[in-house]
Length: 73
Image (cartoon, rainbow, N blue to C red):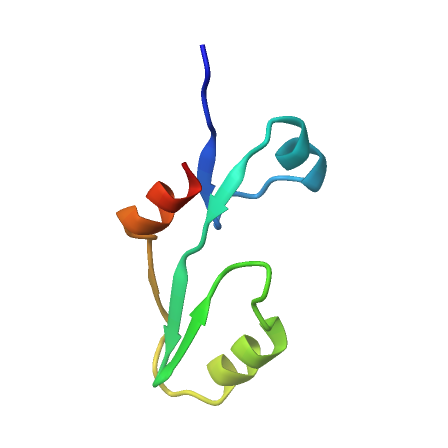
């Protein structure tokens, strides 16, 4: 039987586990004020933290929609 494991980006896995089981990740999105961030390997964490420090609004997150999951299959 073939299978594929896909998690969202809040799943805390080591790189060893990701590679061993060929696990793919669908990214969450994060909005801080008028700035939008995608929680993937290109996330600029310093920019995100800076936006959070300088915003009076609480960050908002959203789960990946079905599209990113389908793309990973």
